[in-house]
Length: 400
Ligand code: FES
Ligand SMILES: [Fe+2]
Image (cartoon, rainbow, N blue to C red; front, side, top):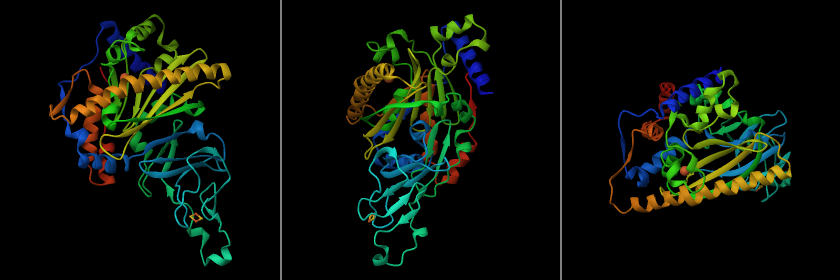
């Protein structure tokens, strides 16, 4: 079914490529600059978007084996993800029930048990407290009430989604809608985790805007990769999630072959986003497809964010292939840092000047328009139930 949907999307984009054009929005959209700078607005975005929606926390490929784990901080919350004996991924607050220490340092590894470094309480891979150091001298503690605090988590399409607030509702079907089966076409769960780079950035939306527009590719990126690209965009959306591709020469080439033979690499091209903070793009190296999956997280202030660039290969690279991948990771890190994020840092500085009251998104920047419209709606949702009502009412949008 989803291959059909991918073919249909490519076919519509091919039509635009033949015309040398792309769809346009009815009008421009203006965004007040305070939306990128105001601390109150920023706090609402964190509370009602990042602390409410499922976030992409990690990848099935990096927790592929039983007893693998990853510990990291997300939105200020120390999180421990594990894959248990039963193959299930679990998520916990990485916080000991005794006096609150992290039970394992941030990083990845394999373990059956976690021994708290402070006073050696022991937890198993399922988060149960299985050992209290010198229990007889400690007191009357029921271990079954002192496991690690679970967090909502769900695995889908090779992505590990989780909430950072205990007890928050996590309904992936409602959140992803029809986009879930589209994402599955990437087969990310069969990929190999091959690298990760972390970058500091400016306001999360300023940074994210750059993943949503192709308008800048042949301009800002002309010296690195953008010279061969046009700046046209054909985008579809499933609720707040979007996928966009370029009506360019690469898609025109599909016109020469029957659609049943269109290669999967071409069908998966372009940029796939998972609202509110992930962008998935792939490129082809000699041995096959490699993904760059960017996760963006707001920082402590409106003008700070962290971007984690993750790399997954559709093949198990040998040392020579790994060298090629690492060269490409260096290249892409440099593009994002020296071109995109350097520009965005300049924008952030200029926003403080008071020179402009608004930024404007053109009719050719529909992806950005839809993204901001969703952010605006979701910060108005008072309760999680309101949020899910908005998601339930969301429609798919397919460009003509
Ligand atoms: S804080 Fe973990 S054992 Fe004391
Ligand atoms: Fe860019």
